[in-house]
Length: 78
Image 1 (cartoon, rainbow, N blue to C red):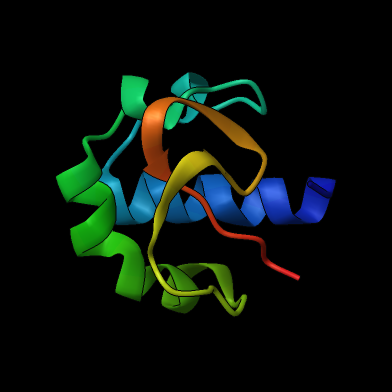
Image 2: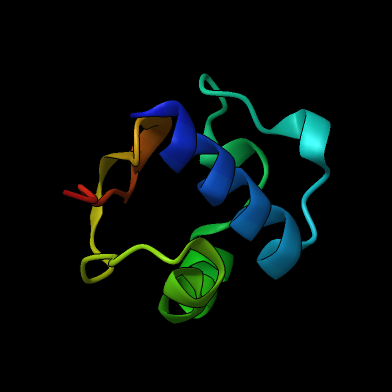
């Protein structure tokens, strides 16, 4: 994940999910800060905050370079 994508995603997570900035690093596991339901509900709005095209929501082991425990959300941005 590029630095630019990371910062855009972090800003979107802060704005959309009210996550504290310090809790989001490139090694953050999203299931430590958000539930699958929160991600699924907020996913359609991420492009508005990131100015990036996001693929459909689906379950996997990683999202945008963030590692997840169990099967959760992942999408390649490119």
